[in-house]
Structures are given as C-alpha cells and as structure tokens.
Length: 311
Image (cartoon, rainbow, N blue to C red; front, top):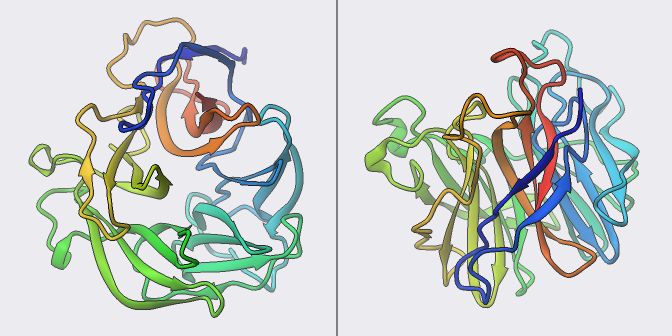
C-alpha cells in the first residue's frame, strides 16, 4: 500500500509561546504494518519506541532511532517464556498499550496483560535487553499504565480505570487515576486519586479515556490521553494543572489530534488517529507519535494499526 503524505495542522499545548504550529509535511507511517499503541522515550541523543503485541510472542518490540525517521529493532521486552506465557489467550488479548520511560540509568516498561497478570512493570539497564521478569502491580486496576518522573525525584503511575464507584453513567464511561510510585521497589505508595472523570466533557458522554501521559513544561503539568475509542472517533485530548495531582482543566479547543469528521471520500484516507505521546526531536521541536490506520474499500485494513508522527 502506498504511503500517504499526511499534512495537517497540529495544535500546540496552550500556554506556550506558539499557539498553532506551522504546516509540516511528513511521510507517514514511520512504522508500517502491525505497530499499534506506540510509546517513546528520549535518552540523550537516542530514541526508543515500543508497541503493543497482544498475544504474539516475542512481545513488545523495542526500536532505536537517532533522528525519529529511521528505526531499527534492537530487541523485545518479552522474549522469554519464563517472563510471560500467552497460551490460551485470544490473539486480540494479551499485552495492551505498553509505555516506556527512563530514570537514573534504568529503563521502565509498564503494561497490561489483560487476561492473566494484569498490570506490571519490567526494567532494564539496556533497552535492547535483557528485561527483568514482570513485577505485578495489583493495586493498579485498569489498562494502559504509564510512569511519570517528576523533577523532585518522585514517580507516579497513571492509567485508565473504572467509572467512579464502579457505577458507569453510560457504556464506555471510564476514568484516569494515579498513584505515587516507588520506582526503586516497584510498588505503589499511598492512596489512589482520580484525575479525570469520563473525559473532556462528561455531559457529552465521552468514551474510553485511556493511554494517559503527563508532560511538565513551564511549570504546568499537561495530562494528555486518547478519547473516543480506537476506531474512527479516536482522538487525543489534553488537560493541564499547576499540581501533578490536579485539578486538571481540559483545553477549550480539544481534541488536539484527530481524523474524525473529515470527508469520507478523501484520497488516501488516514483514520483512527490517537493514542499519542510527545517527544522533543533532534531539531528541538516537539513531535507526536501516535497510532492511525489506512483503510481501503470502506472499512478494510491489510496492515492494521500503524505508527505515525506529526509536529
């Protein structure tokens, strides 16, 4: 399938010096094929990117790049049956939405084994491996956990979870919640706190707020996450707060990334864009990696969800 040139306006986080990014043209996808739910981390001049693999083995490929354009697989996070066994799981189950982070010489990957082990964390000194055996985090109930390391040497784990009191107001009603995280002993600390209920505007019954990350810039904490489900209504939305614990206020021009609402008859369509993570490029500009799909003949796909990138 031909690679489309994806050219859009990508809204910057509000509160910065620039309101709307200049028009940028990039050749997408940057990873073609079965590469959903991307997560990325920058360590010095190196970039490492991982993806979901569900019940396929080995699990969670690790890619390396110097320029965000050329990627080479250097290993897998789950590469030993002693780490995790997917036997008996459906191919669409297994590992959901891993997230990679780095702090003080150690790489961390958090992830969800949806049917068996629940949420867990693995560590490595070298992103190529070997990675540790999974350490389960049973208090984290939900999916899509990610770690945020604050500049005061504290860590936090945030994730998609149940509706308040396990009483959803509608189908797809979820929350974003967070614990402080002891990154040395790999366990949660203190009490769980709810950061987002439902999504940007709960009166509109937003569904599947998930894949959360936190970014700190200019003394603001930006919490950004996917909303709308992973099909054609997929999007990325953002909130901000002066405290890592909130309250988080939604951006008035959400969503900041989506392909929903575009003409269905457009040439070389790209749909279902969302599940994004931000990273600073070699040029000092902020980029987003995210999943999207390239459908043909209606709603058919021969490559599934792929990894894209935009300013």
